[in-house]
Image (cartoon, rainbow, N blue to C red; front, side):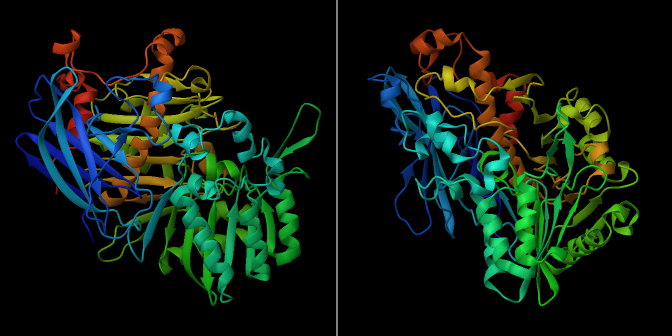
Length: 591
C-alpha cells in the first residue's frame, strides 16, 4: 500500500502531499516568510513523463488587457509567473495514471515591482492510484462543478450559458427518463459525475455483461435514462425496491415518487415489464425508502455492493456534491444482501428485524475496520450517538457536509455540531437551505451561498456561472473527525443523520476508522467548501459595482503597494483559524 501522505522540509519551507480520490492536496508552510514573499509556484510531472508542467492560475498580479479577455478557459497564467497565494491547493489530474506524481513547489519573491525571483524549491512524489483499498473498498465523489468556471470552460464558454445549461438536465424530475442528453462535449456527463459516475456505471456494465450476475437495487430518486437502460438489459436478473413516498398538493393531487406520473413510477412500470412484476417492489417504510444501493451476486453469491449518498438521478449524479462507495468484499456484500432480502420480503417489519438492532462490524487483517448500521430503528440513538461521540472527542479537526441539516432541530448530531462551534479546533461545515447553502466557515461564522450570485456579479477575471437549475446542490452526508490522527473516523452513507429519518426511513450509515479514507473525505470537504467559500466572500464583499471596477488580482508586497498587510500575514495570527488551517495541512504525520 502506497503512502497517502508525504512531507518534506527545507530551509524553513514545508511541502506536504495528501492523496485524495483522483486529486492531490498540497499543503505548504513557511516558518518565517520574508517581506517580499508572494506565493508558491507548483509544477507537476505525471507518471511516464519527463517534463514538469506548471499548474495554471486564473489570477495574475496585473492584466495587460481587460481581465475578462486575459483569462480564458486555458487559464493563461503559469504559477511560475502568477503564484498561488494560498497555503494549500488541490490538483486535479485530467486523467489519473498509475505510478508516482512528482510535485515541485517553489517559493517566489518580488524584490522589486514586477520582478519575480525563485526561492527555496522542494520536490516530493506520491501515488494517486484511484482505488482506495484494492480488492476491498473504492470511494468516489461527483464533481459538483455545474456552478463553476470549470463547467463554463468545459462547454466552450458559450455566449448564453443559461440556455446551454438548461439543456444539460431536465427542469423537473418527471421529465428525466425521456430527457435527450446533450451530446457536446461528448464526455460531459462522465466529467460531471467524476469518479462516482465511473463506479456506478462500471458496476452496471459488469452486471449487464456477465450472465452469471444478478443485481438487487434500492432506489430513492430515479430518473437517469442510461441507468434505466442498463437495468432493463438485465431482464429477470434484476430485483429492485423503489421509493413510493407521496404527498398531496393544494389541489389534492398526489405528488412525489408515488404519483402516477413520477419518474420512479414510470421506471417501476418499465422494469416490471423487463424483469417481471414480482421482481419490482415499492415501499416507503414509515417515511422514505432512502437507500441508494446496488448489490451484485455472482451465481447467487453476493460479492460487491455500491452505496452512499448519491441518488440515481440527474441531480444526484451530475449536479450535487455526492459520494459513493463500492465494497468489493463478500462479507460486506452478504450483509447488504441480507438487508435487501429482509426488506423485499417484509419492509414494514424491518424496524424489528435483528439487522436493524445493532452495528455490524467487518474487520479483516491489513484493512480498515468498517461498521454498518441499517435503519429504520426503534431508537435513533443506536446510530447517532456514535457520531455525536466522535465529534465530541475530536481534538484536531471536524469536517462535515450534511444535507437537510437545517431541518433537524435537535438530536445527537445537530447538538454535537452546534457545540463544535464553541470549540477552538479547526472545523468546516456545510448544509443546504432552501434556495441556498449554509456554510459554517473556519472562524465559526455562517455564510449563505447563492448560486445565482456569480451569474450576475462575477468579478473579473471570473465569468458568469450557471446556477445548476432548480434543487439543492449539496447532498453529501458525511462527518470526518481527526482525519490526521490515528483516531480518525468517517461516518457516511445515505442517512441524513437526523432522529426522524433514522426511526422512519430505510437508510444505511457506515463508520470507517481509517486515516486513508478520512483523508479522502477531508480533501473532498476542502474542495467543496473552498469552492463555496469563494462565492460567499464575493457576495459578502464590496458592492457589485465596485467589484466590477477592480478585478481580482494577486497581491504584491506591501513595500511596493503601500498596503497595510502582506497577503500571508493573516495566516500567522496566533490562535486564528487561518493559522490552524496553515499548520494542519503541513504538519508531520502522527503515528
